[in-house]
Length: 249
Ligand SMILES: [Zn+2]
Image (cartoon, rainbow, N blue to C red; front, side, top):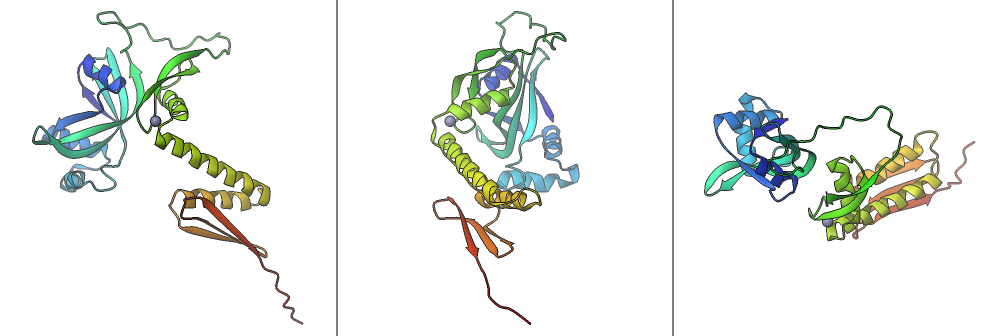
């Protein structure tokens, strides 16, 4: 986790997603912190700087938590990816904000004291109060009003907003999930969940659909199931049954 001290306007802008990038100068101070944030030590500095500038996997796609704080009165914790790019013609570290994790102290009016944080009421009845709140689609960043339980985290609100968003990517991801669920339902009917068969098949479906594995062949007795995806990205499961009449005496 890296903490960046800033002003309240910037914390607010980040929380409201009007600010999606933050540049930091490539000084010794920031280089040390960025390298550590990425999980490397000072001796790896040159390599990491090179990888950040060259957009190498493992550095520019690594998501890390960063807190922007305005003197403790307001703070926003976000997930960022980091690269080296140009701002006003100068090379800088550029932090791209990917997700808002937690926002504190930006809602109240200017000049007013922050309300004390409610830490929970020990004898409160287990009632979920639904309120209209704002969440942001994970794919297009569009904000929308959604009904959500009071006290939902920013991540939960974003999840709900994504669920309802009509942008292409959100629709595509919903469709993908529906396909995965259909394949999972099929597998539950065909395989036993007593002895690891079902778990193996579900894992195979998942990793081929995600593209991590091209295909998986599972043999159970006389049946062979080949799991892969077709050219339209649909999950394809071809099952064959072989009964050989070979007998030995
Ligand atoms: Zn969207």
